[in-house]
Length: 502
Image (cartoon, rainbow, N blue to C red):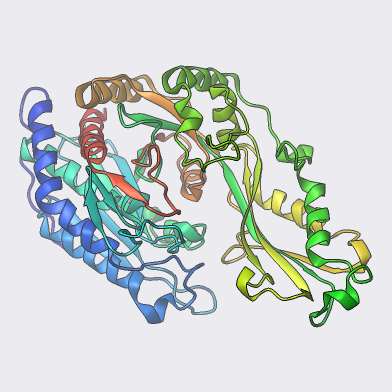
């Protein structure tokens, strides 16, 4: 752990925005980019996708390398450690990088210094297929201002960008509040270990007045975007067993019902396959009026890019395949405030080249159910299990097993608290100064379990949730990239907001 250094008094006058931007750009070129290239090379998959993560040591490796890099930056007032807890059974929890940076502004006598909390994660999604022939998940490549590879944008850059932002402020003696950082390695598995770490750190976090989460997205690469809501998520495996072993389809089909057909019938209980609308009313919620107004404003900014930015395939008529809607408002609402079902994996289906005329004994699908921000995910998981397993057709053996570590079945979404005037003004100024465009507001279709935990623990805190996952950056999928210019500008904008903290 580093010993804190004596901090100089803040420089008089306002922040030099141009100097801030130059310092951040230099840090990205000389220090951050080489480190992120090394980070991408490590297959530090989240525990859900690498059950032997302890033996493989990849998570430990990226945490130790990040910690060593942070300490090498010689940030004044820094104290850092890697925390390693165990669960009730004595099994290791995923490691967490924690750091504190002393405030550079004096507090009134007797006042409790406010804390700015920065969040990111270092664990990654699995490889996925479909990468371009000259790209790969663990082979970083820079092309057209983008750094390709798994995890750079989602969101391995976060801890490095946070420290670069602090350094840029300290370089010109600009004041900043006390800062703590939480960099976990279990986010892509639902952050099941994070509550234990929050409990262990409760006395050290202080009075959190602002959370800066760097694990979100952007509507375009032209302005700073604030995430206003996050969908929840329930994932799990739905399996149908009808036979003990496969049999010749010529002998059994027509007598033995297809396990695939039974599974399809079960999904009809959940989803209207013609429209994609989910049928159970409890999976929907009323969209708040302020969020609807923000969606309409964002649709006016993005226009058809709200749906055209997806990598559409070539369709039947030679043109691109089609979205569920070409209305930008409806497209944004569908991906942020309405529930959707995706099948993300399957078992029991042999590859086409190996598929004989055999009636298979079982079929299993991995389901991903995205939930509106105000729907309780654990309750939705229970109701989903009951819906799918009840009254099984043909008395088939049907099981739905939700994912989750330590009993956490589903992650509830999040709706941001009302913005305080100072934070909205600070972000507007940062967007204008570093992008030349106003702040944008956008809901995200993904899930960040931490946000609900922090909002419950620090109900008075403001939330600045932002990130670099803009159009076609493709987190979790093939050809994921980090838009380097946007990441630099975002880093400078975050530093400016830090300095604006009252």
